[in-house]
Image (cartoon, rainbow, N blue to C red; front, side, top):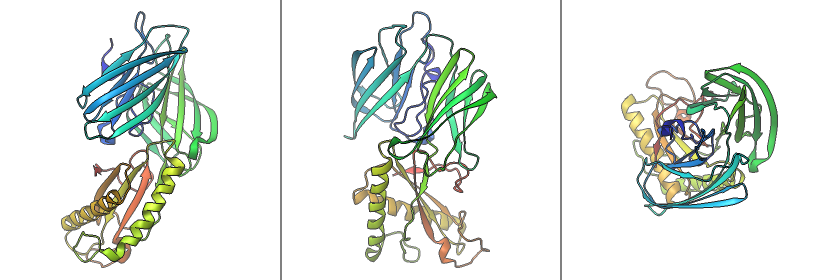
Length: 345
């Protein structure tokens, strides 16, 4: 069996399928990583690999391939433990589907269905551990093991409506390649990409989707991070907006909420960072307590993310704000949000 690092896929979000030949970046803070053998070697069985990022009490995996079902059970999986589920090799069958139901030790239940396509021919490896999107250039960047001649790209929108299908010549690789896509970042929810090089191919999915939720900012008391009761109606409205987002996009990608706290330039920069972090966390906690049960991440930018450029020590109300953003991944390049280590609530 080849090393797991060559076999595990990266997810675009905590539960979205990718090609099965990269390694998921820990910074994504996802619940499970999924992978499969994209090109079983002679005598090797096709296999599906699951690696939980936190402890699992019990897991059921049902693989459907060639009209047959293969059922597997796994209990008491430690975080970071890869479990491989293999089924009978049949070179007439090169597609399968895996249903996964995991019960985590904290009681949270996750269910997902992962489609797979594999080949018994040559292998083209895609490393998604550093996959990223640039929303200004409309590209997704990945690393490949061999030259890639062309790419087939399908762009999906809300409720998985097909927005665009195209085939582009790449002539790039090995190493980093940029795959172009068409559409607006707020509309293209998921990209399904198949790369071709010689007789080999590899597929992956990635979400460049990113939305800024318009809202009325909570007005905090000076140097305080607790939410005043008269301000909660604003967050009630945000809750309704988030539910509308889940209804529209939740069936396509796992939706994550990112809350960025910002201040003006009055006061010490370190104090402002801490204050903005505590306020962002307070908003996240209020949303969680009042019914929002999807993943929430927060970060305090302090005075480093100004809406209006000012000098130091300037009292500017427009800079005392919070940003509410949703996406399958952290805010991408070109979104105007710096790349940071977000904290999961």
